[in-house]
Amino acid sequence: MPSWTSTFHGKYDFGDLRGRGWYVTLGYKYLGPINWLYQSQTLYYFDDQTNWVLDGGIGYKWRTGKFRHQVYLSGSNITNRLVKVPSQNPWVTEPLRKVTSQYTLSF
Image (cartoon, rainbow, N blue to C red; front, side):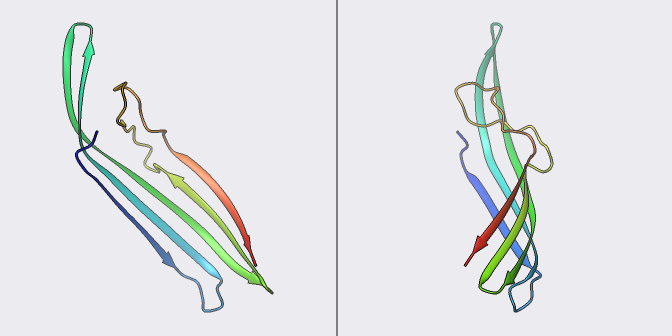
């Protein structure tokens, strides 16, 4: 397991006072050193490394009457880094780049 983890997430809104406009998001997750001890053939390896992941997204929101609409496109691991995660198997990795879209209707 990592000895510590740090995350930062931010959002900047370019919208107007009527609640419509663009916004962007950015997230950064840093996992402290992970001590891996694994066996290959008959040799033991010790791997002390740190991992980080960068996420981001862009969205647009607007209003029509009583309804609020929002569309959002986000990407996870946008740098497409291969990241090890704590597991029983030291070769387990975080999924590579993932993109999702979302539409929200509120009233």
